Length: 254
Image (spheres, rainbow, N blue to C red):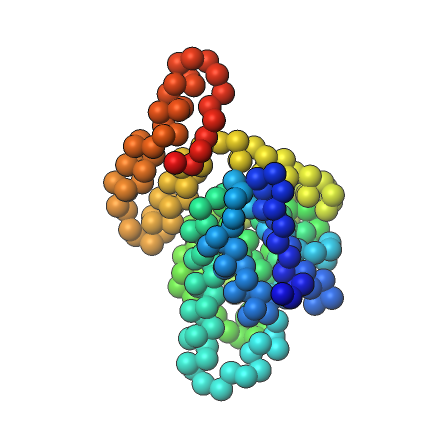
């Protein structure tokens, strides 16, 4: 298996590392597919961290060499369908996902970060989609919808039309990230700390919340299955008993 994307699990936390620092962690199609597979089945973990190797980039989008074989509009449609499928897998991941962002987070890398549940950044992070001055391609509707849900249509227009990258502080001010840390070691420590918090919380509550937000973005407001999943679970009964007997609950995700 390629070392371009690393995945390790430890004590209930999974960590994905986009591992092409020599290429600013630009993603190959194989890396996208591996990331989708991990998101679909992260293993026996309660939280998942996604980050990039080194301090220069989270991920600088798709490796441009992947586009050289494009010969027709069908290639473009297949590419955007692939990206939508990968980002959809991240959104549907059954455990909370944390994007720990240092350096450039652009194009497909920014799409991955936007699909995660929580985004935190080092002070050197830069976030955006500079396609209007680079490749001249476009984002799919689902990508636009995801970004609009995060920051609003006016910010999406500014980001794409001006092709400028938002600083970490700007990203914080508009809601792209929730925290800015001083440097990469502080970022890594905070990501682990957050994952530790999340892995101790009720899995079904977080899963239902993730899916409800995804459905709202897709204009699919049905929620009866999510309500039944939580209220008819062993975890709900455990939570009630723990609350009434004044002890910490033991969540099982079932």
